Image (cartoon, rainbow, N blue to C red):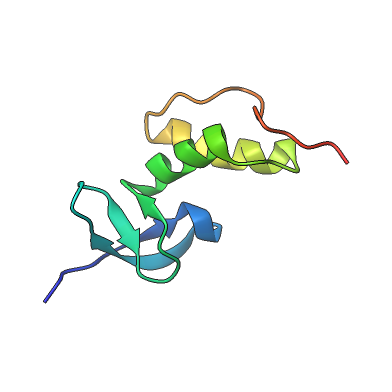
Length: 82
């Protein structure tokens, strides 16, 4: 039986989800398949790679990443202005 860990899923708006361990040391969300080492790690990855439609929403994720010790840009690198 595989053990799971519960943590906020960065790809699911920080909804608490069950995560199963993966072979590379990350955790895989059993709900959506997102892989992250921690909520802060997932937030940092999204800060650097996602397309953002709001600087405010980016800052919410950036604050989670920074609280976990990750360095992310002050402004969204991929901000779409409509």
